[in-house]
Length: 277
Image 1 (cartoon, helix red, strand yellow):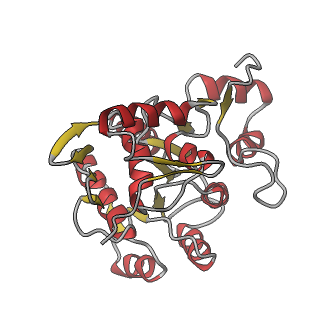
Image 2 (cartoon, rainbow, N blue to C red):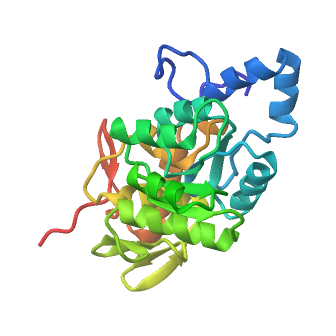
């Protein structure tokens, strides 16, 4: 960036956690590396958090195994997910508290704070973000404990990426109150599995960001979402976001779906009209 006021980087809001002014990942790095090492490692390579240029859903990965973490960031990134990755329990809990995630992938055996503690704290605070436990623990007691604390599902390691993605889609559907992979109502619906819009019986392919924006709006038809809320659903922490990015995506969708499909409420944001009986 060059100071252009028309572009910004998305990041956690300042002061949102105990008066902190920094991205929780940056504070974590500062405890581990020198300033030069931070600048080098964040840029080349970005192994601690990653965002794809075409993000569908934002996933928080809390995993201390670097081989598993790097593999998931890369694999999910090629499937159009944005993945923010942290490696210890305290930083993971702070990142979850920043909010804006579609789902969380949570290891149990973490340094500094266990996955059980993160889960218990999140649910006690009223955070309903879907949490899928990734565990190498074979004991049924750990699985039961995690589910009883509020986890939405668990997946034993090692696992296949296809199963992980299917379970992610399932926990997100359950959170939204949908038994099927299609959400929405009336003339516009969204197929979460094929990532297509269903409009008057036609299936329309979507770009990753079009899908992410429609997914946010169709979770709760009629609810107005602000620009900031939509940006949180579309972009990762270190993505550059132009000031009219949301408008550009909506303009493209309106050209394909019709001007009245997504409506603007002046000064507040956008919504998909709720079906009336």
